[in-house]
Length: 396
Image (cartoon, rainbow, N blue to C red; front, side, top):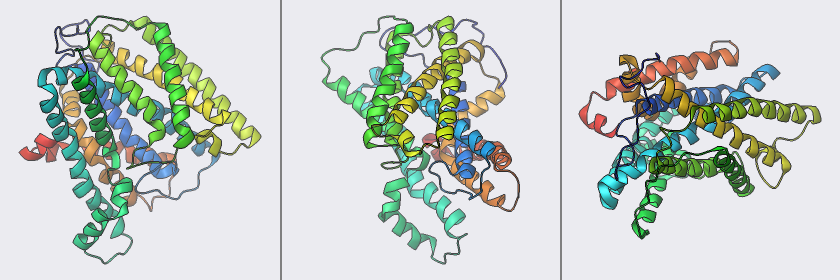
């Protein structure tokens, strides 16, 4: 993405009145499509690392360097990128609710989030599994008979949402928000407010403590309807932070000095913390399971690291994009317009490319980079082509 500034050099000011958030923030659009590209790279990484849940995993043996690369890349990315998407989504919720009211807001969210989820669960996901994986395994069953068994069986309940678990979760979050607003006695205030260091520290502490407690019952590796609740404490808190940012206008006024300081603390401090954990774990040959959850000091270390790194990255990236990428040229507009469709449609691209490259005897890291690059390109091209169809364009 080129560094093209919008005509107004200063960050946009929050809108006045009940419509709290600006209708269009180009730096948020750019941040959103960047995170969605990172989603593609995450799924390509899982394909070759076998660390995480995905449709297809290539059973390649990893040397120590490859293991450290994938473990670091996936853990660092997982710590912040989906939480940042929930923060962005939360930022636009108050203005949508204020302008539409409860019924229209919920109807709009059901269309924008529910229909793509059902489209994926009933069409895109089953077609991807059957034509790329089931038939490749030599199954002779027809698609329709397999489809009926799939949509009525346990598979669709356990993982049928695919990456659209995000939309399902966001629909639930928005429904809770509407319920709170509906039962509240007054409209939330829009008083201007700017966070400081104490607020950031409180955010880190809340994320770390709540995630630790959730992982006592839902450790890393567990999921309900493909939603990994072990990360949801951060998602809920960051979604609420986005709502708070909209109500009090601090997304566009967050001081650059504050953001730069906490990004340095999060990235540099987080890197030291992360590699120290790895060194101790490898030196003492510690088992992996206590790091994933439970009442263990290892889990507390991980959740503390995640909260610090995630907060630093989220604050820092918001201000970096606001200051340096608050505009769009034609390529950036193309990426922004098709980003959500890419999020919905990218799984068959990642899986198809990985299957096509099975015979390529290259290092897993090189295959990861190759699949990530070409899957992203193909996904945007396919998304743009599919969105030419008017009904599809309405949904995606």
